[in-house]
Image (tube, rainbow, N blue to C red; front, side):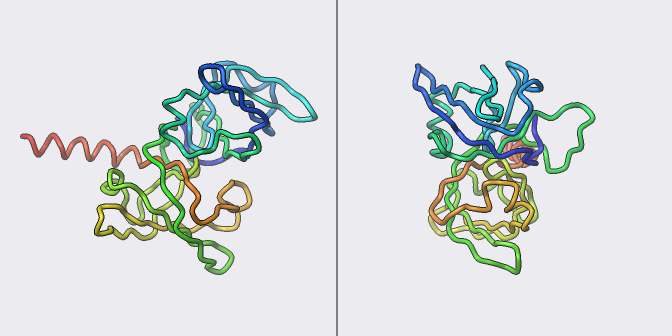
Length: 206
C-alpha cells in the first residue's frame, strides 16, 4: 500500500534480461534500511526488492520485472530512465496523498503542457476503459504521483482527456517536472472509484 507521495527519484543503472527483466535502480535511500522482499513503487508500479547494495557513493536495489508488467506499463524499463520511488506505507505513517495500490490500470499519453504562473497545467488522453473512473476533483496516480483531476472532457471516440496542475514543489521532487508532450505515463485510478463501479455493476443485475 502506498500514498502517491514520492520520497525519492531513482535512476535505472542497468537492465538484464534473464527470463524476467532484472532492473537495478540507484537511489538515495540508505541501503541498510531496504529489506529484501520489501515493496517499492517505481513510477507507480509495485515491485519486490530482490537484491541491494552500495556503489559509487549511492545505494541501489534490484527488482525483477515480468513480461506482464512490461506489457501493461509505460516504456520505462531502460537504462538511464528516472523513476519516482515510494516505499510501502507503514502503520502510523501520514496518509498525505490517497490510497494507492501500485497496480497500474492503464497507460495515458501527455497531450500538452501549459504554464499557469509557476505551475504547469498538463493534459492527458486515456483509454476508453478508464474514462468512467476519472472525475473532476477526484484523485489519480500518474507515474506514482498522487494528483487531483482538474477538468475532464469525454471525446466522441470514447476516450477521455483530463488535466492536472503541477505546483513547483511537485515539479522539483518528481519526474513530472520534465514531462513532455507525447510521453506515455502509468495511470492508477482511485481505488474507491473501482469499488463503486463494481457495486454499480451488481446493482444493475439486481
